[in-house]
Length: 147
Image (cartoon, rainbow, N blue to C red; front, side, top):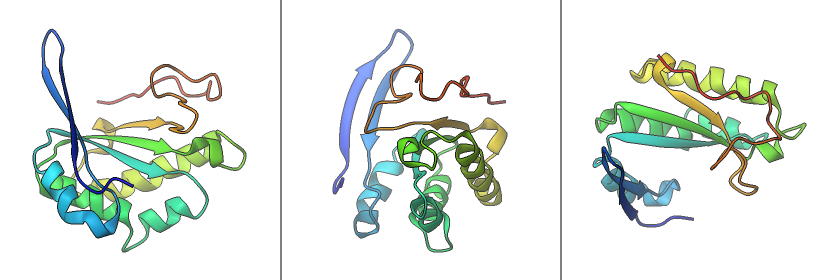
């Protein structure tokens, strides 16, 4: 569990980049706001596990709250990481990914994001799938398409 924000800085030939890891747990929402208010882009991590996704996208769920706060705090660019793809039924399920993508797209559109401009990436943080290189366990994922 992340309690406070953590920072990592690096630069490319074109950009200075600061990555801010902000808490996702509702008990540390003030710290999440501090980190998010400084961001140009946010990576919203959504759990794909049965029950976990449904809890997060529910009326008072953390997925909804974090997406809304990000938009309200001025974060215009969003990437959605659909995590725990290894725990879907069956593991690495394309239909589950598409179901989550559809539901999250519907919600983020209501709060002001353009879902066509949001990248959705199926990942498994535990196994490293699609974290640094394409996963052989999700050959159906060909990369993100954004407008």
